[in-house]
Image (cartoon, rainbow, N blue to C red; front, side, top):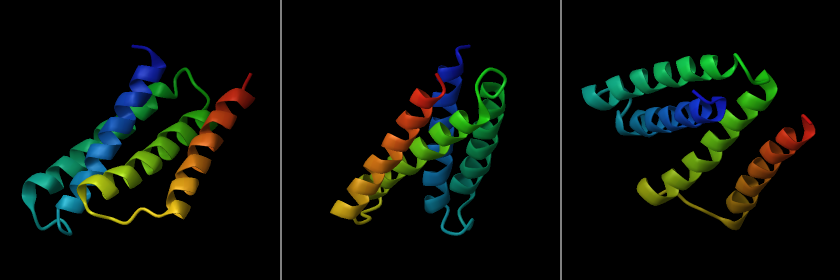
Length: 106
């Protein structure tokens, strides 16, 4: 499978795991707790596969950057968390940093 597709799946699994972690209520709810563990395990496995053909610095920046930015939006949309102008600018900086790392590898 294409490395970018594997990375996208790893990011998706991480987002599912992090959302489930919030829903697990401190690991007191069984299904969200199991989803958290399974999601992180899947994410790390897919991340490891991605590292076979991509640079670790770029992969980690994309995985963590995309996860952070998208999770902030998920928190706003689904968990009623705040979204300020500073948070929006910070998300833009994260995305810009990931793009810069990808452009810098050429």
